[in-house]
Structure formats: structure tokens, C-alpha cells
Figure 1: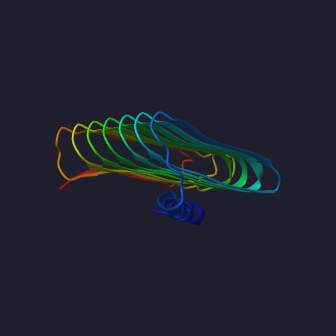
Figure 2 (figure 1 turned 120 degrees about the horizontal axis):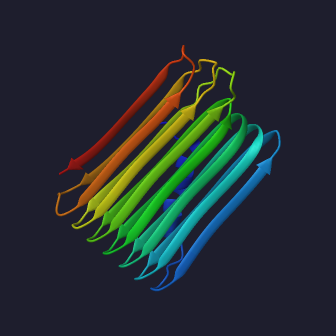
Length: 248
């Protein structure tokens, strides 16, 4: 997998900060973190990150990054990270990126670690791009230790190119979940759309859903991947996908 350097750095840095210096919260709190960016120009670079640590029961946490850009050269990077320790918590993480230009690079990531019972977490990365050279990378990762938890993960990428250009959009998406406990529910979905004009440009789409668990003890896992690629009659379309559940 090819991940943007900023995204890998952001996740690693936030995880260190979360365990070392982040504030702790008691039960029953509502935490909302939102970042919105809009840029128009020649070279547009947008970087954003949210991080939170929650201790206690019945907390609500929502993290969201929204980025919109128009320009000749566009790079968008966004990440959310959360650690939740307690029961009955609800966590939502979302990265939403829109771009229109010539060269476009989009990278979005969500990471969560949950320790406790009866928690609900949902992770979403949505990317849309219209341009010539388009590179989209989205990934979610979640770790759950406990019983009766629900985790949903979705990555969605849409790429449109100008009708007559010979372009090569690349979409790379993944969902990963590690489960320790029983009566947990995990749903993973990947959706990729790449619509190229008549210039016979190649399309590269890849995705993976992976669940790791020590024991299939009354857990429910659902995985789905859907790719659509359309280009000219002389084009090359490369699509690769895998769903995996590892037990033991």
C-alpha cells in the first residue's frame, strides 16, 4: 500500500500524543472536533488532523475533516485518531475531500482503539476528484478489545478525468480491524469509481478488507468491495481486491 508521508506521520505522532499528554474525560461528555478547509489557487496544499482520548462511559465523540480545493496542483491530507476506554461510548470519524484541478493527490485516514463493552464506532473516508493526474488513498484501522462492540468502516473514492486527456487515476483503499472479545460486529465496505474519457488512459484500483481475531466467539463480520472503471477502447484497467478474516 502507498500512503502519503504526512498521513503516516500524523497518525504516529497523534498516537504518541494521545498516550502521553492528551486530556482525559469522565463519562457522559460530548466531544466534537471539526476542521473545514477551502482553497482556490495555483498550488493548494491542505493538511489537517484531529486527536482525542476518552475515559469513562456513555461519551459521544465526533471527529471530522472537510477539505475542498480548486487549482493546478492540489495535495490534501487528513487524519483522525481516537482512543476510547470505557463502556457505551459512540465515536464517529470522517474524512471528506473534494478537489478539481490538474494534478490531485488525496490521502485520508482514520484510526481508533476501543477498550470496553457495548461501544459503537464508525469510520468513513470519502474522496472525490476531477482532473488529469489523480491519486487517491484512503484507509481505516480499528482495534477493539471487549464484548458487544460495533465497528463500521467505509472508504469511497470517485475520480473523473477530462474527456480527451490520457490520464491514469490510481485508487488505493483499505480497512483493517483487530478484534479481541465476543459478540462484536464489524462491517467493512470499499467503493471505487474511476471514469476516464476517450484518451485510453489506464486505471489502477486496489482495495483490501482485513479482520483479525483470536477466536470466532459469536462475532459477526461483513466485508464488501465494489469497483467501477471506465475508459477508452484501447485502455488498460487494473483492479485488485481482497477480503480476509484471520482467526487465531
